[in-house]
Length: 446
Image 1 (spheres, rainbow, N blue to C red):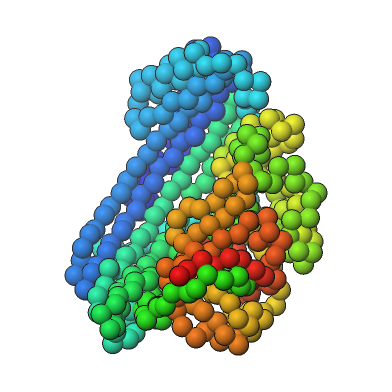
Image 2 (tube, rainbow, N blue to C red):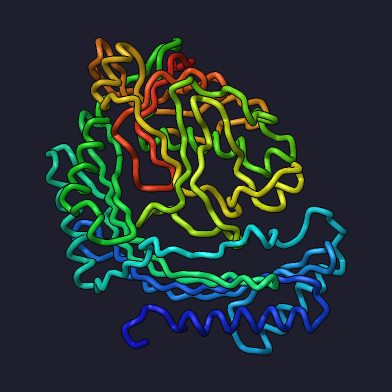
């Protein structure tokens, strides 16, 4: 284990999980589940070429959930000693005894648990040391600073490499887990012209170091994105088309996912209640969930309850085909879990064929949004209002940057008003989608 980033073998973690479950059953639990994990990593940041921080992290933890019939209790600890595990089980049982019965509480159904766990190539450790990490971060920052003479200051560049592994087990006989990695490199700089300053950034992240963008390209893009915001103007209030650049378009997809996720649905706090089978998007819109993408940042063979994940159509021809449910919310709704306890997996939204330039031409005259501010979404009503910055477009061409504006609408109308989806797909997260053009929104300014 000398070359391993972990303190424990996978077999040792399984043994800890099994020990915890045995303690729970011996103490009177009717069912139990446990998740045990550990992680380690390195983060290095530089500013103006000087090292600012060097952080090594190493952490571990074990959580146990027990059931007394349909009463539930949970406790956790970072101490893996037998006494600590026993105390955690006792605490969880104490909580369960004072908890009300809940007829939807309990482990996932046994027949839905994963039987096969394919290797999705999620563990690709990077043997980068502090010296090499510092060099890469410096290269990234230097590229940003030389991108334009108007870049006057830097917030620095950071490189991070993280490894983790986990085991989930329950008293239905399921025990499974796997290691994974995540690497990232980011940079943020400040530009100045005519006494006004602007800031922007860029980053790259991937399972494997070889899949990261180069430090030069990350820094250069951070610099270019910063400079293009200089001499921003305000806009008069108007109605116009709005193009969400791909990195912020993922937020629209996240809003939709939240609206059809179990917690909001069974609490009746979503504007998309009872939307299964409803036309919410235009007929060309498709959304596929694929948990099995090799090296995918949201790939997983099973969810946080051990339920097998599956590739599925979430939206087909604009019609909602399925929700995002774990076992508890599914029971509340009288449905079956979709294997989404813990969140969505890789969501793929196919493009309509236009690149970013093609989307600008299609829009003709309107607003490109590159940054959103605040949390202005009411999921109950769908009302949407966010501070924004971006660019004004005339005749299909960007003419000047804009700031200090607010965009507003209703999310149901926005989703139904999608005109086109770009080929400039954002791949740095769990939602893969290009820039999204919406036919009409209110832009509030001066």
